[in-house]
Amino acid sequence: MIISCNVKQTESGELPEVDIDVDAEAGNLPEYDVNWADVNVGTKTKMVKVPKVVVVMEEEEIEVPYVDVDMPNDIEGYDMEKSERSIIVEAEVSGKEHSLEIQEIRATKNNLFVISTLEELDTDLGDKTMRVQDQLELNAPDLNVKHVIVGTRPDRVFNSQHMYVSSMDKLNDKIKNAKVIYKD
Picture: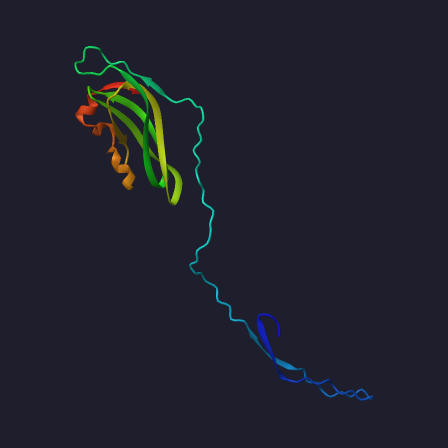
């Protein structure tokens, strides 16, 4: 028996008879039925260990934008004490890679409006999602920070934390009339 097949002799063989005067009768070769293995190729679902890419965040010293804001002293009710903090804007995208960049910060009496742009790039993500972000360091009075992203809101629950507008022209009057304190 040979691996992966079953061989069964169906007729025995016979060598030809030979006369000295060189007359020969026809011989008969043995016959065989060969039954090969039945091979089916497909897929099945199975739990296996697969490698996963893990992004490790490491602290590294780099240059980041720094904005130092001194508000006018004549505004009533202002707490003029400044504090330094990181302003981070983040979006979760799918489909294609995107870039997210802080373009400007505008201030009113109580609010800082951080205006960023979200632009789709050419690289396809397939069925994956990714988070994009930008940040700067701000030294200013403790005001409410509100993020406005100019671009199409990605269809992810994570992105509901910020206001999205299609263009700078679509900013409401409160934001349009706020004082620009930082511009990239």
